[in-house]
Length: 589
Image (cartoon, rainbow, N blue to C red; front, side):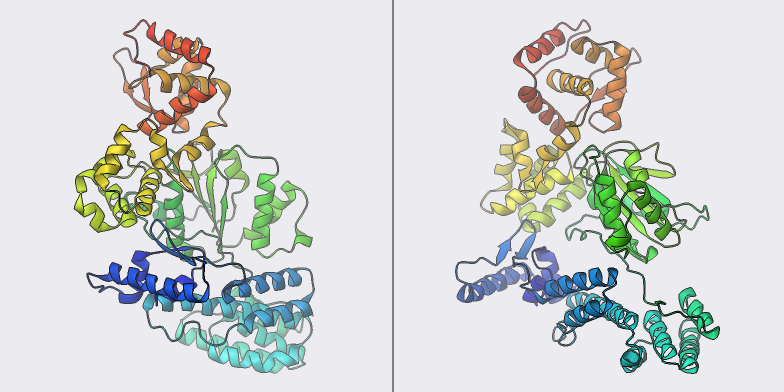
């Protein structure tokens, strides 16, 4: 069971919790985790006997990963052959495409993991059965396109009998005998399918099947007619297995993204907030939950939080078009033509587009679908008030309870239960930010001998706080750097001045004095930083001025960056001017 879960998720982490659920479902014994660890140990011993010196099973922050090379697992070989077949079909090489599709299908030697009864494993097997059927439909389409109508009739008849509600197969079974001169048989296939759908589902056949029926009645089906389903992209990254539910956001986002409001416009939701608050994880989690509302596909692009690079949007559009079934030969060269084709294709489809870490509204607007049944889910570090139709959601850090739950899921509940006080000190020091908690949690998993109390003490006395919140790709310093390095020079000066000199919070008057710029300009740049969640407005002082503050982790990054990027003379000048500030002064570091 455990090996099966690792094999169907090659090179990806399978959490201990998932493994426990796969083996025992909802009734695990108290020793479930220990039994999983023992089983993994035995698997490693078995692998070592066959592959000495290769550590195939790696321990990760939240579970285990089976590290395999390319073409080691037949599912990866299947995917590669299907990609090649689709490329051939897109270029009009239907005979070659059909042969490659058949090679891919021949890799199935029966139902996937049929001997394993775990509900979790059966769910994975069901997904692969659906994938096999879709590829089988694509294969038959290529064979029909190459003129092999009579050869596929028997195969299609058997498939339609086995899956009577699959309209793609039924349409193909209508087309094959029609092209063999058997119009009556083709119409009979439609009538039989219509009777089944009305009896079982209470609905008429879909529009494409009815259009094909009408064309056959009028004997107007040309040789290039196709009936198979349009490609349905499913580009969403995997949902995090240890994701902590955030009902204060998910219900609102789901309601907006699934509303039948009759506006004739796409549903748009922007998840906004500071770096590391969990916007991306939340967006992907919700996107998986609303997939059924967007059955024609889900498109995803990680835009990296940086300023848009030349050609980046064009490259994303080309990728979307390929995922929607457009061959390279039909994808326009110019970005504007790609955009027009993209909007045309999705205009009548129920497609969800998820754009992660967009730089600004212009970038999101360019990649937005426009159809009335489409959805756009965006994450960004800055306000997107100028993105038309946006329903904004500001994602704050976790509550303390949620933060402790996340740490428990990563490090193990027993470890947190043993010292809940130290666990609380750790999540508070992490600013209750999911990214920082994941990083420190991964460090603790990698160092099982370190007590939580020792880890908390180390964070609290560290002279380089950001080092404590970095582990592999989980690196707060790197993520903040992406946001900071695209700031205009004056904005960076104002930000550095506050981070270097302000102990608690500061006003535009203080920033203007330290940076030697007019107060209105300082106010404008502080508002600019607040829009990007790099500082936050914390209130109004007795003179009516807004006061701005940066959290502990952001402050640590700014002070570190200021020491590296500002000259010694510039730092000294900022500190001296801060000390000379006439209204009480402000302590500097």
